[in-house]
Every structure is written in structure tokens, then in C-alpha cells.
Amino acid sequence: MNVAILAKVLGDRRRAIIGNSVGLVALIVWLGALFPILRESDAFVEMIERFPPEMSSVFGLDPATFLTAAGFVSTELYSLFAPLLVLIFVIGAVTSEVTAEERDGLMDMLLSTPAPRGRILLSKAVGVALSTLVLVVVLTAALLAVSPIFDMGLSVVGVLAAGVSLWLLGILFGAVALLVGSFSGRTVVAGGATGLVAVLAWFVNGFAGLYSWLEGPSAASPFTWYLEPNPLLEGFTAGHLWLAITTALLTAAAVALFLRRDIATERAVLPDTAVTRRRSRKRAPRPRAAWLLAGLFRKSLWDRRRSIWGWGGGLGLLTLVMFSAWPALAQDAEALADLITSMPREVFAMFGMSDPEAIVTPAGFISSRTYQTIGPILVIMFAVRGVSMGLTKEEHSGVLDLVLANPASRARIVATKAAAIAFSTGFVVLFPALMALVGDIQWETDLGAGRILAASAGLGLLGLFFAGLAMLIWSLGGSSFPAVRIAGVVALVTFLLNGLGSLTESLAPVRAISPFYWYFGDSPPLAKGFEPSYFLLLAGTLAMGWIAIERMRRRDIAV
Image (cartoon, rainbow, N blue to C red; front, side, top):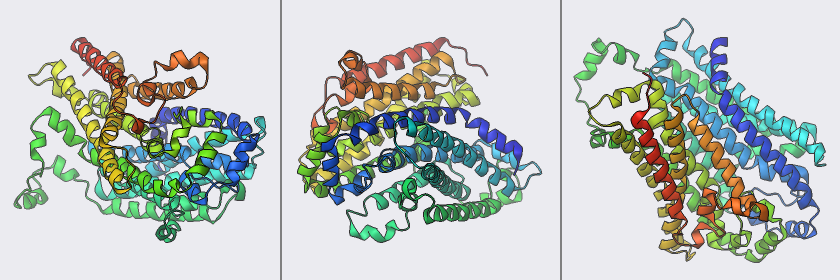
């Protein structure tokens, strides 16, 4: 291992580790305070005992253990939020340390040192694994600290086993990203392919109870090794071994590919070599979308073309999954309604649902994941990431200096990039809209095209609002200011403010300033049309964008 590379990787990830750790600790404290309320609710206990088995797999819930602290924490923390945050962290770290550095030419310089290729790649992989371990250690320590405070009685061995399982799951998909990146050398391909594999693995595991044909493939899903049997109850199991072995094999394959792949250094630095001359005799293929490279707006779309398909396709797949699951749940709608009414509203407020009874309807059930939890998270991340890639990072790397040297005004250049972010975000939310239209017809949910398109438009406007906020912060502070992270923190705070404001009268007036309230309101997005409050999202986005453009007219950009 190369100590310098390890230290560099850990240093690059320090802000992300701190931000994710704060969010996980807050989530654990919330769950710890919520568990005693649920445990003491007789109606809730009765409903859990009657919970239909078909619903359990969709919600990641085991009725036999949910009333225990281990079952509750597994369902609410380890089945969704912890894996989601860890996988996003790991995949982003791997693509940044390997494929992004190759794209930017930094890998060429690193490989020119006497250190062997394999050692360099392994050092980066170990650095990402250690960064992830720090995140998991914080989560584990917080859970061990919260357990006695709220009388959860969690086993120390079980908590440690669950932490190790979470870490192994994260680095397994990190190894997938490393393998794809070592093969393709492309950041978007590595991140998109790994995200798709993760979604498919989660789907196979979660929906095996609904579809018998998934029972066989589910045995090979990393999420099955991760969750079954429950590490919090069983401690260390064979699943840990399968996760570790698979990670080692994927990493070894990635190193083997990286040792043999041409990263095109000689073509970039020595264009007149014999290799290049031989290749130049062949007819150069014309890009299928070469017209996208003819202007700044189209070039910005070209740079994110794979991200658009990857993020949009993932949202579309999630939408189809929710539609396909509804018929099985509708058969036990009465039992689901009893469960909803027996649960404290705080549980649903945490997920932005102020009208939990609506979950027993197609609009409420499908909105609960696509338009109220996972969908907003992904769209906000995509839109804010567009600001990071198109503006913040380009200023930091000096690319924006070159763009601004062209005979076009600053305002026009920044506005063009902002328009490209808006267009690409709109294209991403078009995927779930189209899949919802197909699902509405196929499964006869009677949602209607108007409500589907309105909910998707609101989802896109919500993402663009926080992109506008990130753009405004960047224009004020420059590339050295953490604009994207601040926008993410504001998104988290306003999301919680919307949920908590529906529970307490004291926070109700403040809730009105939350962008999530403008989008969610008090009913699922698919249960209503285009709300007047959506214009607040649009107006806020345009206002922040205009201020950012005006600020950029006068701000000094350090070369």
C-alpha cells in the first residue's frame, strides 16, 4: 500500500464523511426516540401481528421481529437509509478517485511514478474502504450510545455484526464500480452501471416475496447476504463471508483489467507515435450525436448524456416497481389501512407524509417512494450535481476561465449552463412520468395523465429549486465555498421542517417556507394536479438564478 495515496483519499473524503455522519447520527437519535412510542402502542402491536406477508417484502419488514428493537432498527435504518447513504458515498468516491482522475489526466501523472499500477489502484481502493469504515464506525458508535438511553437492549455483537455487514455491502458495490471503471475508464459508465446493479439487487431481494420467479435469483443478491439472516439478531453469519469473498474477487478482477488496459496516455501526449499513425489510417467514426457539440448548451447536455439516461432510467424502473407491487397490496388494503391508523403520525412525518391514510390508495402508495422519498432525493442530487459539474468544478479546474474567454457575455454563458441543467433535470423526471403513464394503463390505477404529469413537473421544479440555491451560493462564495453541501443541508433541514410542521402547531407557520411543503402539501403529489404552490418553486428558482447571473457579471474569477 502507498501511505501517501491512502492519506490523500481520506483527506479528499473528509467533508463527505462529516456530512453523512451528522445525518446518520440525527437519524439514529430520531429512531431511538420513536421506538418506545411504537412499542407501547397496543393497536400497533396488534396490526403488526396481522401484517400480510406479501407486504413485508416491499417494506423490508419482518413481522416476527419488528416489535423488537433489532427488528425495528433493521427495517427503519439498515434496510433503506443506511445502505442508500453508504452506497452513494462509496460509488461517488470510487468514480472520483479512479475514473475522474483518469478523465482529468491526473492518473497519467500518478502512473508516471515508480509505484506499480496495481499498488496504486489498490491503495485508492483501500483508501475508499477506510473512508467508508469511518462512516460505519460513527453509525455503529451512535447506535450503541442510543440503545441504553431509550432502553432498546441491542446486543453489542449484533450491532457490530450489522455494522460490518453494512460496510461489506458498501465496499462490494465499490468494487463493482472499480471493476466497471477499470474496464471503461468512464466516470458516468462506472457510476451508472453500479447504481443499476444495486437497484436490481435490491429489487430481487425485496420483491422475492411477491414474485416466485425471483426466489432463485434472490439467493445471489448481495442484499440477501446483507439482510438475511438479520445480523442484529444473529450476529456474524455466512452472509458476511459471501460479501467479503465477492468483494475480493471483484477487486482482483478490477486490478487485472487495470494492469492491461491502455489509458490513452500516448495518444494524449504523443499524438505522432506509430500507434496513433496506424489508427489514423482507419476511418474515424462520426459521433452519432455530433450536433450536440456545436454549442455551449448542447455541449453541457453532451457531458451529462449518460447521467441523464442512468438517473432517469433508475427513477423509471422504481416507478414501474411501485406500480407492479400495488395489485398485491390492494388485496389487503383493509389490513394496511388498520396498520396505518395504528402507527404514530411521527413515523410518516419523518418521510414527508402528513396524510398517511392516503397510502392505501394507488396515488399515495406510488407517491410514497417515487415522489415523496427516493424520487426527490435522486432528482435534487442530480440537479445540484449539475451545478457542481458545470460551474463549481469548472471554475476550480480553470475550464470556466477558458469558456469565458470566448466572445460571449458572462451572463449569457452562465444562463446557458443553467438552462442546460434545467433541461437535463426535466428530461430525467420525464422517465418516471412515462413509466407512470404506462403503469396507470397496465395496472388500471386510474391516476390520469394530468395528475401524473403535474406530479412529475413538481418533482423537477423541486430539484431545480435547490440547484438554483447551489448556484446562488456558488456565485457569492466562488468555487472554494461548499455550495453543493450547503444546498444539501438546507434540503435536509427543510424536509424535516415540513414533516415536523405537520405535527406541532408551533412549527406550522414555519412549515410554509419549506420548498417540500410547496411540493408535498398535505396530500400525495399523484393525488392532485398542478398546484399553485408549484409556482413558488418556479419563482424561487428563477429569482436565485437571476441573482447568481447578476453576481457573476461582477465577481472576479481567479485564474
